[in-house]
Image (cartoon, rainbow, N blue to C red; front, side, top):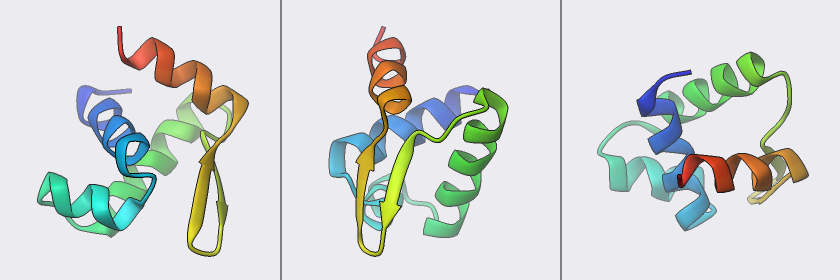
Amino acid sequence: MNLNQINYFLAICKTMNFTKAAHNLYISQTAVTKQIQLLETELGTKLFNRDNKQIELTEAGRFFLIEAKK
């Protein structure tokens, strides 16, 4: 886990949209998605439920959000 991944996660939580978060971070949506996938793999759990165009935090994602804000 690295600081960029945490910042990307927080940006997604703020917008609840991968594309908007990427735009705000001045990076590609693909890069954001890849880093979140790596973070989820490292943590061994999904942080977001993805359903077509909508996303929501999983229970693990909500817990990680609390920890990431510290």
